[in-house]
Image (cartoon, rainbow, N blue to C red; front, top):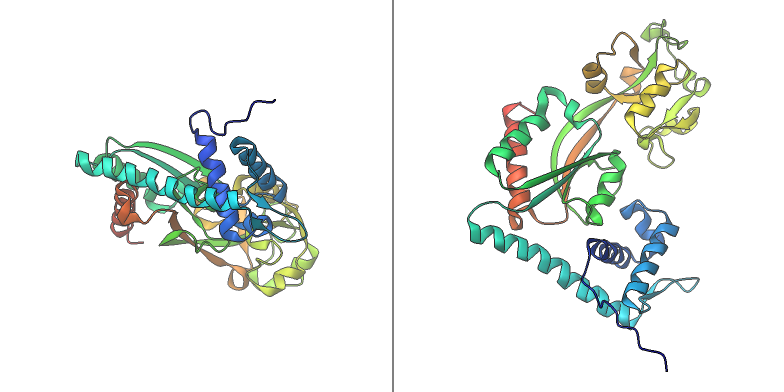
Amino acid sequence: MGRRKTALSGQLADMDLRLLRVFKAVVEAGGFSNAEIALNLANSTICNYIADLEKRLDMRLCERGRGGFRLTEHGQRVYAASLELLQAIEQFQNQVNSSHGQVLGQLSLGMAEHMLGMPRSLMVDTLTRFSTSAPAVQVQISTMASHDVIPAVTDGRIKLGITVLHQDADHLHQVELFEEQMQLYCSKGHPLWNLHEDQLCVEMLQQYKVVESPRLQPGREIFPEMQQWNRHGSAYHQEARAALILTGHYLGYLPRHLVESWGWQDQLRPVFTAQYSYSNRYYAVTRAQPEKDPVIRCFLDCLQASMAGHAY
């Protein structure tokens, strides 16, 4: 007779917690496909994560296929237990902080790329204030493409994210922060470089190549006529997009403050500024309610104080 497997015979690891958070997101989205946007993961990757969790627990958690998504009895129990576990971890951290009478713990912060280039050194000032207010907190900072921040908060890789919301994030707590201006740029070698603004016509955007960025993806266009633009190639990271624009073969969107901080005003020129400039609004996003997490509350207080001091 074979020996019966014992699920979770070892200790829970960080990877186990991540798998549980992915499972929680799938359940709350109502299926694998629906969870793709929230997690920003391919369906196959989500399937692999859930399969890994099922193997780790030695039980079938859900049925998926033509009949739709459905939790098994084991899946219902694991989902309920996951909620209790993740809440207990958060409560434990908060109670330890409170008992010490100071802010302790860890802040894993994920920021959209080039946040340090924001005008008036907003993030540097915020981190300076936070380091003074909570010197015992260990800070871990990651920079990533703006559309990767929400999934990282959702599955627990980071505790707090600062980014533009490219998709619905109603499952997260949001704090509205500031705006950045996005402009469409060409470089010196591009045919539009020497044309005055009044010589430009929108039909040119069907002729010349435009680098696809997050707000130019199908279904996410800010202006309806963007659907007719000659989108050719894609670059979701700003440095990669700038590299293509600088070849003189592409038009593309960049934050105005970034071009100025790079000192590239003599190499990059905004075009169609009246018609096709737009603003991105940044948010701080977190799974936890700030008032329940001293680390998050302290950081947001420092961020808002910096914004007030810099007149954002």
